[in-house]
Length: 511
Image 1 (cartoon, rainbow, N blue to C red):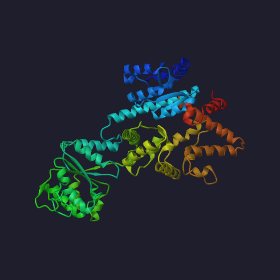
Image 2: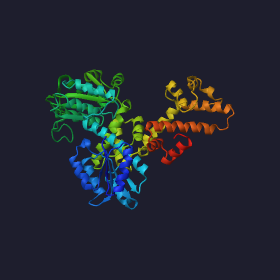
Image 3: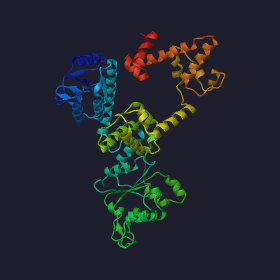
Image 4: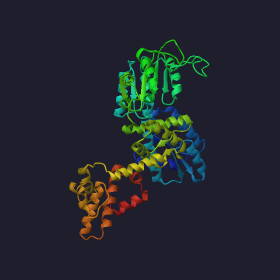
């Protein structure tokens, strides 16, 4: 693991942090002033550089804020923690504006400082992974199997000039697929011309597609080349083809059949050497049945069909896309890219995104402008996403997901409770647990209710204390196992304070 770099002219601060981080198995490297750090950065390969930089704000021979600015130019993804006295809170604000991960007020509580450094290390490791993904990413992003199928299809079509029909919901990235098909085709050297047939009024669409001669209609003062001529030797992308007026469909069919068309008001045939890629969010087969789309044109377009999955069908791509769009938004606005917490990412991944990738991109742009801190937390997400998450929670309460009964049945025993029979956990047997109807609950809750009922029927009067003790013991032991015994990190993950977990460990005799 790469070391934590500590920059402070105070030897005692450096010593205390070095020893505390050593106990956490975190390597360190210390410096007295910013000049030493900048020299070391210039001489150290990037893969051996710092994992996190912890710097004082006021030192002889340089400022921590100046160091922050120079380090961010070289390593933009490096978390930097600025140490500052309470009287320097104005400087702390400047530190955040300069891209600092967090500031640490002096004198600091050592366990809190170590906890903060642990968070910065986790953030650094996430940044490394996301930066690698973004650096290596092609013009389209997607690790989900459905997207990999699309990529394979683009690869198979790379030497072909066949007509392609791309289907998929609005905002799913159909134009990106069309551009990729063009870029990886023999026509890559020619123009790529796109037109949204649904966005242009019917009386102008014909002229847009095929051009017009001078005097063809009022306002046609010069001859104008249409999109087919503009795309000569390249690719014409017809987006939302399902909305094309019926009479224009006939003209399009003729061009696809023999490669010739007439400009509006023209009498000489014009030849078009164009590959057509069409896209639609509509069901063209249904449009054919309804008589609003020509069947022969449908078959002419539907030579090769690529279906682009909705974002909700490839949720595993949401974290990568989110980080990519946050980087892009920051670049467009000329600001430091924001990072996003795991909790906020999980909520985004669970959101249905009716607007698909385009909506996610807009959300990331909104967060870049509106999120108050450098790290985006769950509460910073836009209202429509939080509202969607609330609806999802309601749905889960109304219709709980299938449970791994043997696994959940063993949970109470692991927490010091008697094992619960799978029969008790069965939805059919659930009414037997209590005489009064209960709301739908998860399996471990039904096990808890069964244990409480057993103790109550036995005449116990300390049921609250007994079950609370077992519950807290199970939670703390599980968290400590997850963090390999690190109490501060366990408390952070449980959402309780350091003093609380220490007191509970003593009360529950878990030393």
